[in-house]
Every structure is written in structure tokens, then in C-alpha cells.
Length: 207
Ligand SMILES: C[S@@+](CC[C@H](N)C(=O)[O-])C[C@H]1O[C@@H](n2cnc3c(N)ncnc32)[C@H](O)[C@@H]1O
Image (cartoon, rainbow, N blue to C red; front, side, top):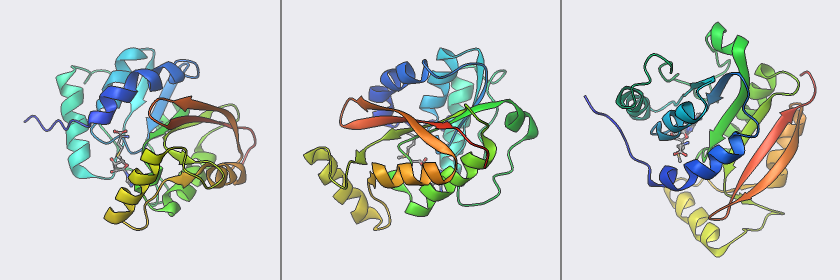
């Protein structure tokens, strides 16, 4: 059965996100948290054939979509099935093979459509799993010094808060504070199209 979902933003942002990832991805496995439809997962698996891209999502419909995308792109031999991973359900219990080969964690457009505790748990979990020099990559809209970087982000923030008042565009400084608490520094902050940012955190100390 074809359960593929189509998230329109992925068409627009996958190439520029891939360009940033190409500078940090080496060998091993990458864990994607909040993979959504799975469109990013298959695109990045094809773009970076030397690695294993491990998708995950707590939403069953999204995991079904990811499985369908993997089948559609004939990547079954390469890509594992998505994990049912909710950052708030700790410990994350990753397969040993993945934990041992992990080189980084990627989360795209997740933290503003989840409660603030998900940001806290994302860094806590990543801080436990990743070793010195490994990366945590975030992509999405952020506030800087508690201000929106564009009018469209202000309207977008209001629209997601109407759906769930615990959601909202996060303040970059507070996100970086959580990173620091868990042994990460922000190595690079890259301005992306459509008022988004790529943030590359690097693990610098053992937690
Ligand atoms: C806006 S979608 C983004 C999906 C995909 N990364 C993309 O860019 O198209 C946010 C995703 O985060 C997932 N998510 C929400 N809460 C989560 C949590 N607590 N732990 C992990 N993922 C979560 C949702 O199920 C959803 O797939």
C-alpha cells in the first residue's frame, strides 16, 4: 500500500539543507528525529550513500509514510525502518548497531511544533548518545534575542500557537543554553532561505 505523505516544505528546503549537511556528514549513521513524511530521509540517503540514514517519528502515520517512501525509492536494502522515537520517552533505547555507529543527529522543523520540554529532552538524549566531536543539527525558524526575524515568522508563530499553545518558534539563545547544559557548543549558525536557520552543535565534553 502506498502510504506516502507529501510535505511541501521538504521540496523547497531539502537541497539547501543537504548542502549544509554535506559539510558535516562523514561515515557511520545519522539519526533523524521527527522525520515526518520521510521525504528528507530518502533524499539524504541517496545524496550521502556512504552513510546509513536512520529515520524516526512518534506518529504512526508518519512512520507508515517513511516506510512507503523507502520502498518507493527502492532503498530497503540500505535504509532501516523508522524508529518509534519520542524524545520525551526516555531512555531512547536505540538499536546497538545504530548507537555504535552514530556520528550525528538531525532534527528538521521539529522543536517549534512540539512543547519546550521536547527541546530539553532532545539535547539531554543527544548529549548522552553523542561523543566528543559529533554533531547535532537543527533546522527551522528561530527567534533571535526574543524577536522574530521576519513578519512571516511572527504570523507563522501565531498560527502554530493557535493549534497548540505549547508550540512556538523558539528563542535561539535559550536553545543554545540547553545545548551548553548538555556538553554542546554551537559551532555554526547559518542563515537559510525563507527566514530559517541551520544550527550546527558540536559535542565538546563528556556528559
Ligand atoms: C513539522 S513536522 C517536520 C517533519 C519533517 N522533519 C519535515 O521537515 O518535513 C514535525 C515532526 O516532529 C515530530 N514530533 C513531534 N513531537 C515529537 C517528539 N516529542 N519526539 C520526536 N518527534 C516529534 C512530528 O511527529 C512531526 O513528524
